[in-house]
Length: 405
Image (cartoon, rainbow, N blue to C red; front, side, top):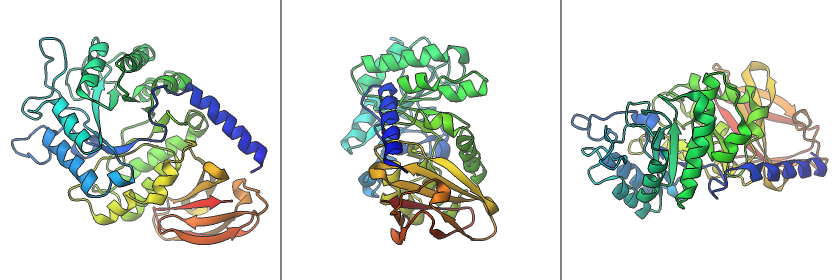
């Protein structure tokens, strides 16, 4: 790629950054852990005390983020999703944690998580109720924003059940402004575009990026390889729109990492992690850190793949080639005129060997690139534009490679 094209990319990036939510947060995609996909709305602490949504579960997961090395590689948010509140607000109209499952109170939980050098995230809903039927924030946006700040919340995910989707263009910016007005930096995660998509309402992504740090565009992920592929397909089909608003401070969120749960093989786990890295996606795990297989932990803690995800340019990668036998090639520009390339295989029968070239990916730098495979950090050599790249990828898996000039 020419120096002029790189200059154009950087100018465009600066323009996008100016549109991003101005709260100083999410300069790279946030990393952490959250309850929903693995633990859902399990409130049965009497019969399942180790797995119910409770202060105990949150503290244990925070402990594991620290003791098992996740914090050291960048995972810092510990987020409770739906089903944490009491069914009623207090006498002053404020939210409160369920008294049996969060007996110490939410502020005490936040203080504990902060004592570990981590950040605390919480969930609410722009509606009369949350998706799980707990008190929503509609009519209480300013009060809830201040309550979260008083508790020491560092991230808010605002869902959209039981709401009027046509009002979200007003309501989400209101909540964003209320959060900023508290004076506490609170990363704002919006479900706004996903609800507008579902209602077939045109999405103003410039506006979304102005008021949200991260946002959901598509369906909730499930513990399923098919759902991982559905989400990847949606991002590929809409990549020109979505990539235009990916920048420091504002990132598309394809939903949680399910590595280490029940459905994904090791190869499929590599594929999800590589794809989330190349798409500049938040890395928010939803798994059981107490029992995770160390092989999945090693994937989640791969420093070179995380470095791709956390690249300071914040550019979302795109699918640039679809080859025979279910192979896709995705490319993401990185700092220092480097790139990350992901080779994704949807073939479920056998490893695929194929030859391609840098010029087939639109890379014409005359002196070529040094290629490094990132799972093991293996140098592959220097390749010029018309050299064939003899590459191989396992079934339902992905290789991720850094290209350095």
